[in-house]
Structures are given as C-alpha cells and as structure tokens.
Length: 193
Image (tube, rainbow, N blue to C red):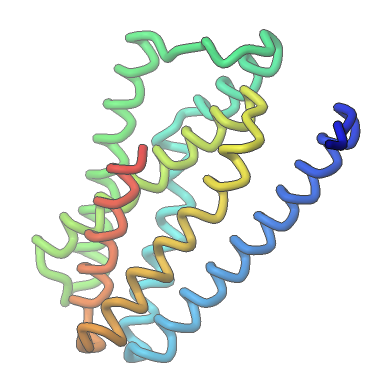
C-alpha cells in the first residue's frame, strides 16, 4: 500500500477540482443547448432574461455571507462556524426582497407570464442563492471532497431534469416547460441543502 504525502494529496484534489469545474461547464452548456433546441425563440429569450436576473440577485440574497463563510472558516481552519440568528434574519429578509423583485419584474416585463408562473419562477432565485452559500461553506472549510461533488451537482440536476421533461415526458415548448423545470430544480436543490 502506497501512502501519499499531503502535498501529493493536495495535487490530486486540485486536479479533481479542475475536472469538476470542467464537468460543470459541460453540464451548463448541455442545458443551454437543450433549452435552445426545444423551445421557441421567445421562450428561450425569457429563459435567458430569467437567468440573468438570477445571477444579478444572488449577491442581493446572500448579502456577502458566502464571502464571510469562506473568510471565517479559512482563518479558523475549522468548519464549526455557524450562522448566527442575525445572519439568518438577514438571509430571510434579503430572500423575501429578492423573491418579490423577481416576481414583480417577471410579471410586468413579460406580459404573457401568468401570476402563478411568475411566483414559481421566483423560487429559483432562492435555490441558486442557498446553493452558493453551501458551496462557499465548503470552500471556506476546505472540504475538498464535498466541493468536488457539490460543484457539478447543480448543473447535473439541471440537465437531468431537462432531459426528463423534454425527451421522456415530451413537454411542449412553451413557458410551462421553463416553469416546471424551475419548480422541479428548486425543489431538488432545496432538498439537497
């Protein structure tokens, strides 16, 4: 049995992390292609605007807590740092504000989206933001094993749901595809956290 030094183990983890990042990119690209090929241009436009809004509101939801978790856990070199009640209160308030922002923006920017669909799509913001917080926790605590698995997990779940909806269920290419996709995706991510 060959024992590897700590330096060799770090090199292996770095290689696995780079591979994990590459796998994440492949899954993300595949999801974009699946949506583009199986929806109308207008629906793909809604999906693109929605993804842009998600990326813009994630910092609003997390309020820098991801960076805080990375910094504190890296300084203490421990994963015992927990979120205090103040952090949780800020997270709830910022989540509510972001949820309402996405909800109202989608409803008034896209007239064809029903209130219920706009409501469901707003949950995607929260699932992405909480996913980012968990990933920041893994980075800060230097938990490389979970980080290697967690990083491509989000995009793997997206591709799996899209493949299931498009090819197994034969979902129609309208706004309902994006809504059902987001609803299932958010539900699975929340259960994972």
